[in-house]
Amino acid sequence: LLRPRTCPQNGSMLPAKSSLAQLQETGRAFEVEHECLGKCQGLFAPQFYVQPDAPCIQCLECCGMFAPQTFVMHSHRLPDKRTCHWGFESAKWPCYLHVNQKYLGTPEEKKLNSLLEEMKEKFSVP
Ligand SMILES: [Zn+2]
Ligand SMILES: [Zn+2]
Image 1 (cartoon, helix red, strand yellow):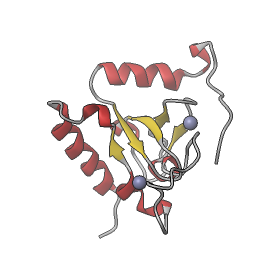
Image 2 (tube, protein in one colour):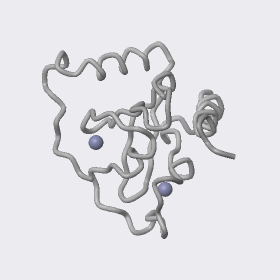
Image 3 (cartoon, helix red, strand yellow):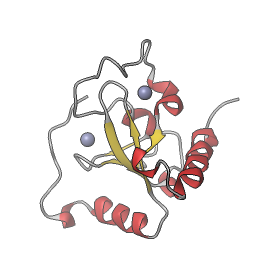
């Protein structure tokens, strides 16, 4: 699950990174995080989430792109026993993925939370 740091120094090698950064500036992408099997923060671009396994979350640490279900299994840190989920299943990623805590208490918190909930339900089977 762990990947080496592959983020190139030269951003031109990874167009996804610059485009995601631009998307964040225009307010369409926002930061998310999970604390499963180790904590990880990423940038979620809703417009890239066009199918259940579409890579739409970029890890802030290694710049890799992940689908939501893959992202909750991705981490650069060892699991914290206090937050480790008993019976972890990546298929339950909507339970594990949250907006970045930096948004907590800000005017954006509510908007981003509902946007994330929308994304979680986008491909969910009733
Ligand atoms: Zn990573
Ligand atoms: Zn969790």
